[in-house]
Amino acid sequence: MIKNYLEQLRIQRWDDHRYYHHSRINQSLHFVSALSFLFAYVWLFVDPMISALVGWLVSMTSRQAGHFFFEPHDYDHINQATHEYKEEIKVGYNLQRKVVLMAIWAFSPLVLFVDPTLFGLFTPWANATDFVRQVAKIWLVVGGGGLLFRTVHLFFIRDVETGLVWMTKILTDPFHDLMLYRGAPLALMRGELMDPGLHLNPEHTLGLISEPVLEEQHA
Image (cartoon, rainbow, N blue to C red; front, side, top):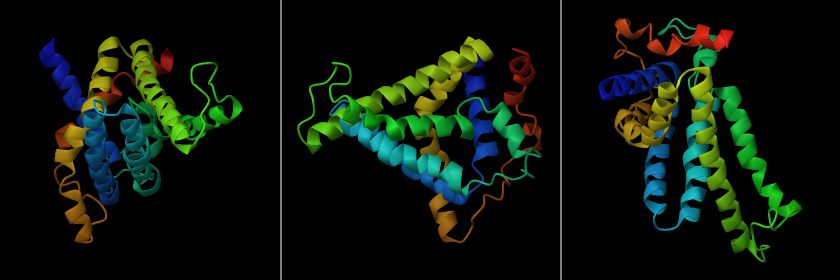
């Protein structure tokens, strides 16, 4: 079971890389995101509020900016797949789901203006510092909730293993991305805007990520 779990994790990581990380700018932003996420992981044990602020304001914004603004959304000639197809088979958050998640994150602080106690959970904020720390608490919940929601969702539309593998992938992505994209900033400085994809082996062009699609469509 452990061997199969690790193999599924490898497949999800490989498909995520080959489908969604062609841009050297996107890869470089993921490198920055990975560094800041690792800082946020450590700071969870020091000050979780600081960790939440760094995680959302630096790690997530740099990570998602790469996908939204720099990653190609046209036909993928390396993998011979349309953008629509890749969005359909995405195991985790595709661009549409990310828009929803980022909108919840961006607008969640407004709740504190409507109800400073957040339905009795908080002491009303008295200054900017109090407000920021309470926002950080909300963002911690949004982050954890977003992770758990998609994990459980995958339990139903795919299977339990797929959901748990995806959650493991998300939590360990900063370590993996740090190693995978450490050379991207240097490649970008050399003027290489797109990863040439020479490392993509043809035997991987039928990634197992697409196998559950028919089951999901008929669910």
